[in-house]
Image 1: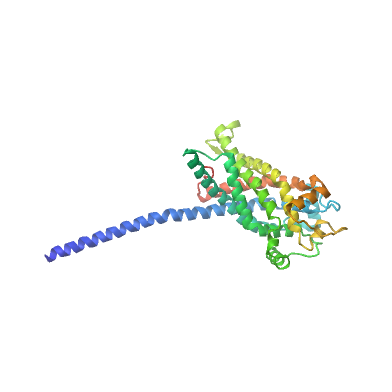
Image 2 (image 1 turned 180 degrees about the horizontal axis):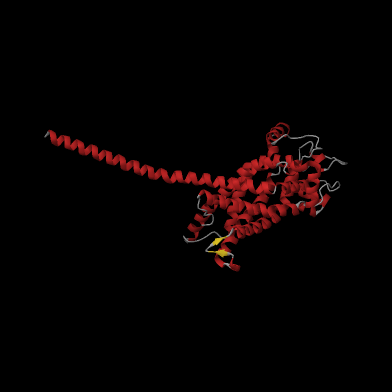
Length: 355
């Protein structure tokens, strides 16, 4: 009888151990996908950040010249075209002048790019899920219009999250050696704006930025992804090898996407920059130059900024700096897309933006 009790106790203990082992196995299986998902998110964010930093640094001189052209006084021209403008900066401020504000720009664009690419992937998945549910077609793919919507969502999220840094970056960029007041860096600029102009000043120009980012980022992603899909399906001119696009072809897709997006949204970018200068007591000396007419900059809002810009400077003023911006955007967007995909490939993350 005692031996039977011992045997029963032993069997119960073995069964308990087996059950515990099974529970541990199930727990590991539940944790594994979660850990993998977190790791995948981190890799996606890293790839987006690297893409943004590399692409913006490569075109930093053109970025600075674009902003200087956008805000300079038409009656006191110092920057007259891309080549002349770059030469003038080199002559008056040296090599460092070409990259002024780039540190702040990278501090902004790295998280901005990381959030933008990640948000696009998540928005695409969510929109595709809803689209398949609505159509009842589990094999449905994103249309160009749906990609535009996903890109717009990503652009708004990323821009809003990093807008204060973009605002002070604009002010840092337009400073010259002759400016009467110097921001010493991003954190000094942020603290100064907060102290002298209040928290709301950090979001000056936010409205035209939101309106501008919808076509800009939306079209960037929509055109890039749609072009890639078309090239893979149509295989024109022998550009596709085994359903894979080469780096040069992807760069060309990025260039086309960047050209379309920035041309549509550019006037809003000009207005945004001008509104960011409002309230800065020393902005007039920069925007109007070192000569006469240092009147304070005053806009009551986005519409007023558009009206005054067109009234006093003409419609062409809405496209000031478009040429250096075009020269900048084409390689910048191309490098960003390709760098993002290459880094994700390097990190071993499967890129599935469109399906």
